[in-house]
Image (cartoon, rainbow, N blue to C red; front, side, top):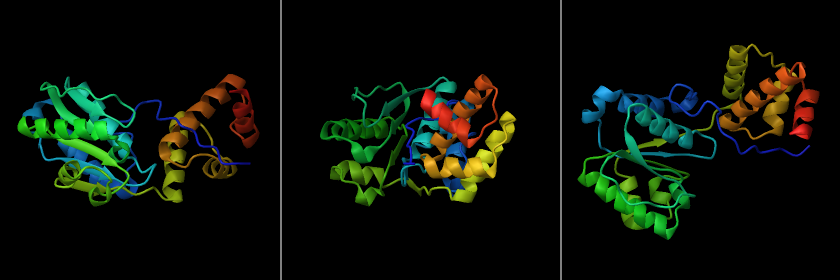
Length: 227
């Protein structure tokens, strides 16, 4: 059977609390302290933060978690991803967030640089994420150098034992039993990034309840055939 890549995210929405750090504890700890609570907004550091690493290492999860954390505090943010249409900078933004910068078009790079300059002028932080380290980004020089002068964190993929541990903990929290055989099947046949695996677990849990069947390999195959 060919490996299936599920292009789906966490149903509960990315937060700093549901991010399993593993080898990325330093980045998570820094963002937790940086985000703080609403009372700390006035003293939040404007120094840029850049996260980089391979697909599935949690860059976008953390960036989206920061966005949701700021929104929960009542703050507006500027967000630009690789598929977004750029907008004008807004002085009311508490922060500028740039995701998948390695995919930015020339127009998006122009807007990102403009946002960066305005954010610095108004002492607003910029948080960005990309596939590569700043020096290796194929971006315009002025944007690339700005992405590289603040706090930089290299994110790593979770090892298989860590993925298994997260799945087991999440399944136990749902009152769901995952046999070693089912776990092996999930890790070998589906996208191995944690967000997709957690969403797969949510889907399996729902399908299991709907069909009144335990989660087994035949159940997984049945779900795929009927969805």
